[in-house]
Length: 552
Image (cartoon, rainbow, N blue to C red; front, side, top):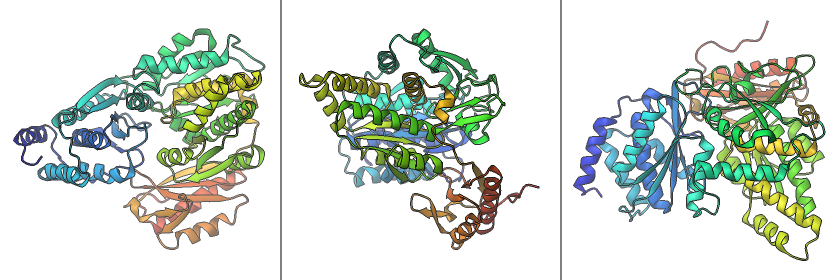
């Protein structure tokens, strides 16, 4: 490799086009790379190189998504998607970080280091790299940089244009399963989801207290663009009213709207009418998160977040599974951000196994795969359901068995349709929306009945800016702080003062900030608990800027 002059010429040419201009250190985290778009051109080119090496090592198709998800429009980022639709393997995250930060003169040496370490001997294979991008104006040139990196190592870039992040995951899995998962096209994606949705729903659009009208906040991003097509095909079966659907170049992407805004601010996004008792949902900028909400008769805001979606899905799937007569293991996976009330409801009311992992869908997804039916959602609305091959094979065999009872057979076929409705590869706002609407319709529930399953504990999320986020380390699925020394003891002392108090801190995966989560029996106590813990983080973890202050 190092003696190939043609490669050296390509590297030299590309380095002139995508030079590393700054000494800023970038770290590949849970969400990949994410920062100001102007600082990412060399990173994108190098991720194209790394994607080709990864594809040759795995002997499969790799995906690259250019997006900064729920961040402001001026930001951008990149995620690498592994052959099974999962996030990049952790062992390679450090290589992504090294590729992004190595000086131009050492880039070729770093490439050769990977080739040697992983014994990649198929450097002439023209592997396919699936590339997608969101609606940010910067995404077009950044995606072009990824393509140039792919071409520099003689890979084959497959440009899908503007698509959602979950669609890229779907395309990758379709290609790596020889289309067994579905057709690797946008049309194939929509056909799979919509056909399953219509089969389960039938021709009765309203049922009980359920009404087939939904207000949809597209965050002025790709989720708005893609749901327009979905809405046209669904027609009367689901009436989706579009809001915040200004797309490219409006400067409004995620601005005062979208899933992250609604979740963090716990209020209506700009642009969505405040109609009482009307079901609303918001997705984020790349359409992999979704939250629901509504306004009650007293004009009080109610949020139904990822915890609510998880419990709704888990309870429905458990009921449907029981009707099949099959003995399959179902479990629900949460992060420490899950509301304590939801965990108690799942364990004690639904009697479903609950696991807790570190924050980040890659951790939740991995744990969910240990169940026959694994439901996982982060509180922010990012999640899905995964089904084992064992579960699918048993469902198909039982459904086709002539000795199976009519009721069991019907339940098996319905569960197989629900599986087709779900994008198992990653959290998918569009797929999750169709799943929620399917369950509410079947139960004849309005949004208030959904919320009445249990009562959330008040919760608060704060951010503390620090000099170096790596000062804070954690254990026990990020619920216990290990460093800096003494911080966890301080948190324990503060929490003990509040009824039903719980708080933990963790470092951001992309920024030098420490996230503080708190919950307690009352909203007032929750606010005080969050501020007190944030003050200790500021004091012991090297906070910069204004210190957190208690409310007057």
